[in-house]
Length: 417
Image (tube, rainbow, N blue to C red; front, side, top):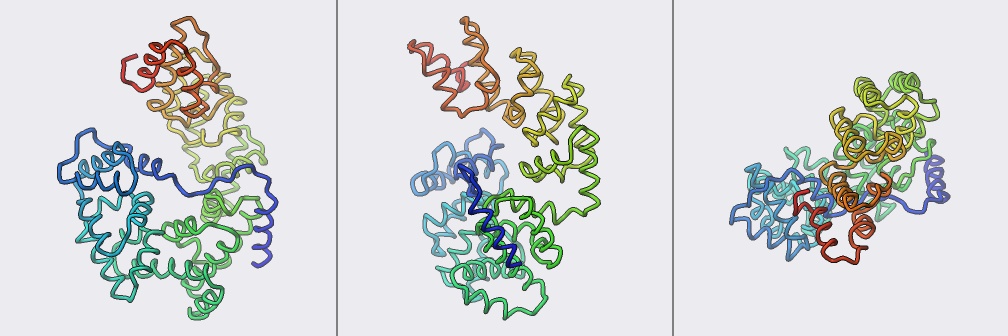
């Protein structure tokens, strides 16, 4: 196991990546994703405090804070004011609460008195100080939403041990020596500490511990799976490493072999499959039915087998998308915008973009410019860029201020197109 750790560290040291993708979510995107289905109705006046607090104290935008509250109202659950007041009464500062809401926004939907208060009371009764409590729960707020003292205490202790072991190697040794040899608890702590030494961030470890603790509770199977993932070259600092470990651990060799053979029948080489797995570990977990449905959908839309293989090799996430979404996006891009199938094949990432939030608004701007005599630019130039780049490229560059205002209105949806 020690040689495995050295190998993982050397992998990190010598990888020549320009930019690493860390797992820390952006506050705004996390909250927006969590509450994207919010009702348009205004929240009740009793939640005015929550909106003001999220905006003034935590730095959220008014639009985002109101979106959170609309979601709470639409589900008719909880009282966010009570949740926030409960946290503050237990010594959580604004910085703690901001982190908690960012990582676990659904906490605002929980019942402060029936769910959260009993868990906090239980943890205090076990001797947890305010500083310890706020540190641990800010890192893993999902503990607060767990049911049952046994589960709450067990996961709280796991997280505490990992945090303390990070601070002191002596604590790590004493922690392991205090646990029964070969026990589930010892395996979990040992395996998590091995992952930590490899460079897996705390945040990813805690997520793995809470959602898939069975993966790190074994010994031989865990070590075998970890060896495979490290050998494939996954960077331990990324979420892909943890996702690959989860997939490899849960799938038998026979299941993996069957899945690879299925991809071979569709036109992929074995080495293609493993390269795609490195880009998108979930590739091997997609069911045979969904893989075949995806293939048949693209064939029905006049893509060739070779074009399908090209797209998936470049963007494996194309596999497993719903037939309805793929059909809608293809028909819009090819029939409405008059791009060719080859244009789409060269930019398969477009299948992962939202039709309503990204594709249609941008294409409406392009159609308005085409109506004025402009030619149609390439798919990639229009869709595979950030909003700011798109706006600078097609909207703000014009000298005509009225045209800029008109195009901006089309882009934001303030004017029918």
